[in-house]
Length: 89
Image (cartoon, rainbow, N blue to C red; front, side, top):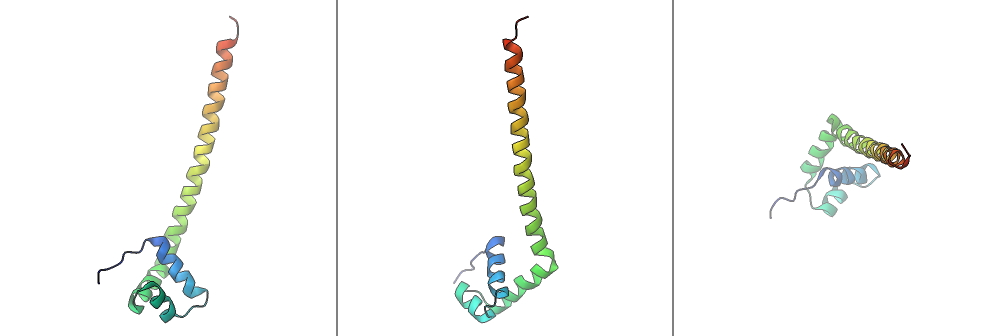
């Protein structure tokens, strides 16, 4: 049986299941992983992995906010440009 790759979000969800009260053996059986894999992921999370995922999500939100600001500024500039073209000289 080949290795199944889990992305960071999936790993975080699996670890959150355990934090919500599920036993390690139940979580491992449900997702087809071994207990050592689970504990390795858990130790990685404790070393700051969770912080990096949170930081990435914060950066994505900031990026969306900046894109909106840029779009508004471009719309304002286009409107002003159009108004200047319509004014008589």
